[in-house]
Image (cartoon, rainbow, N blue to C red; front, side):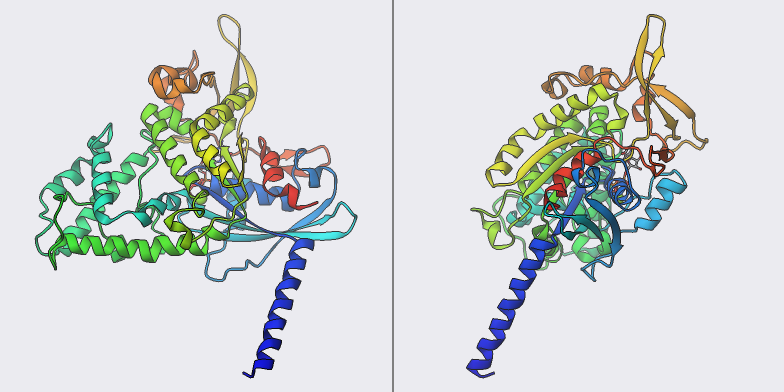
Length: 486
Ligand SMILES: Nc1nc2c(ncn2[C@@H]2O[C@H](COP(=O)(O)OP(=O)(O)OP(=O)(O)O)[C@@H](O)[C@H]2O)c(=O)[nH]1
Ligand SMILES: [Mg+2]
């Protein structure tokens, strides 16, 4: 290419990016990240959000809809060809038509929604919302990028030997004791170790423990990597101050751990995380409260790690790898419909307290952060129920059979959700005593802790449009992208 045409070509490129830039000012695109640990409510949140925008919901706090400036929304083909599409139609069918919760998802997925609106100046514009759903567990992997296999092994082992975890890790620990790290690499032993280690992680996630886990995130959320060598490793009990011998089991485990970081962790942060404009982190805090103080401390630790991801990129080593660009971050306690409305503010207060220090640090890096309690789909209604001495506030919904129960739905039940403590620190310190009030009211037995409700029927709105009931979903929408629709 001659110098002249080279200049012309560069000029064309520059002109094009200017046009794209201008286009983005007029018709903004927002890449919205939805994340949360497993079962936090990501799929339900996205489904309810899109359904509400496409089919019309009641969102008085979402200004563009409330004022009538938003005139319609539709799905369009997504920008990234290599990412699975979010199965919106399947999830709506489950939630709205069949009144059952959508299946659990284990993958990153994406959906593009285009909203037509009238700008403050009266011109017609569109907001393109690229919604990206990814497992929060993947964010917990960030620290691995700065950690050797030996460090990770030592920390993971120490953790598995504390608190309630040794019981859950017993089978894996037995297997570990029989392994000599400097002996020849043994594939069968590696497969067995990875299996037992994964089982330990899974047991911690069980709702009785509700632990928020340690990395590696893909052991529970393998995506398309299930069974590959990059996922076939586990910690070893290693002597300090020595190096692995060539061809040893230790050397193989270390190589696979390094492969996991290169093939899985780094590309995720570079290709997905670093491109997010606005982020919501969904948190099932009530499940942790119900499981007890260890689960609460554990969740707090996981939240700190997750929020850390939004802070890096200024001074530390990782900045050469990626720079998070999210400028707004919403931390949302989900399933608030399990509480009486009087409890919603306390739920927000507790979550704020749990994340206070991490939020302080993330703010420092320039992101705007809010904490709210919401229910993307409200499955209960409130009622006053008479007992011997007076009236008690209750929530009423159609109960689902508990996992493992063979029977049909238990029908309508009223539960007395009790109060969250006014002082959130009680949740960490007094442990069980603080929780008892939350999960069991006067008439409840302990089993009600784990009551799950069936999704509600559509409600007929005043204007005749049937909509899914929710709690504060509109506040989340306003914070996440309402400001981009001026
Ligand atoms: N009552 C109530 N329950 C909810 C709500 N959102 C989620 N749930 C419950 O939480 C479960 C998990 O919700 P999902 O949206 O599938 O959670 P997820 O984060 O996508 O979970 P994975 O895909 O397994 O990681 C559902 O099956 C419901 O039982 C809500 O707004 N209200
Ligand atoms: Mg999901």
